[in-house]
Length: 357
Image 1 (tube, rainbow, N blue to C red):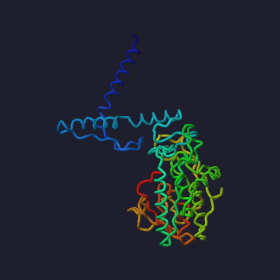
Image 2: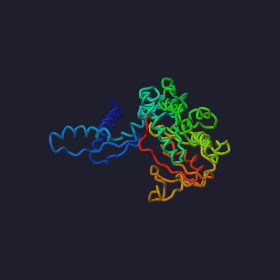
Image 3: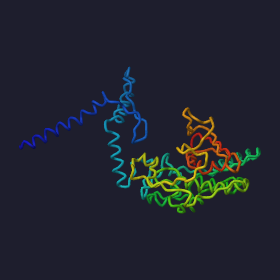
Image 4: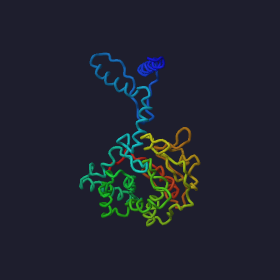
């Protein structure tokens, strides 16, 4: 056996020993991670030693979770696995569906099941929701307040051509679509804002799509289309409201673009960034740092920045002179740029928990 071959075996053995021993050193002398950068979740921490035989079983299970979560180079290996799967057009998690052309779709809480009738509401449940909305409208109307109900379509309902073929679904099967049909045949018809037809009509009307390919939410162009549909409905009662869709000269395209929350979850990296649309002229209430709005002391944290989920008042001095109360979800973040500037004041309250239709 040659000297070179002996040297190779020697260093291979040393390397193998180091790979085996390093995790043990890490467990005893390394710093435990609290959050996984690749999985976006809390990691199991070192369990306390058991004080009795009854606690031993729980300790063993806890230590196994701790060992698995804190394994040295775990994030690196998981990140590598994600990139390999994405290279083959596969999603590394059931919570995100990898579509065509680097489009990603949210499937948290089995959102797609809503379109496949796995979470179908009964006719009685749909009518109960319709009655609740009608009663809310009536209660507010008795106090001189107009009420509008505007559900937001999921990205995969508008851009289903980018879904894998097996996941291209019929929007007609969606619970919210059935609810809107029920409401449209009742006394709440003037309060219902169905933006789905507008989104379909305008989805190819701009240089960019209305939703960010790597995110769950619409972009500023999608928010503009929604604002246009809402204002058209509201003008029947509030003619002072006025809005026009942005033209080609009203926004610019940032080629470096955005990734999005879904890109971060699957570890897509820079290759999944897509161009982003930015409005050229923000309303005077929008800060340059894009922290959204200058607001009064209600809803500010100690640094003077907007607390995202706190109730707050947006003071934009819109020409309509109207005040509006918005019960928001996460799609409001972009809608705030296009809708709030139309009003003198906008009161914003985040819904506690998502209503699952």
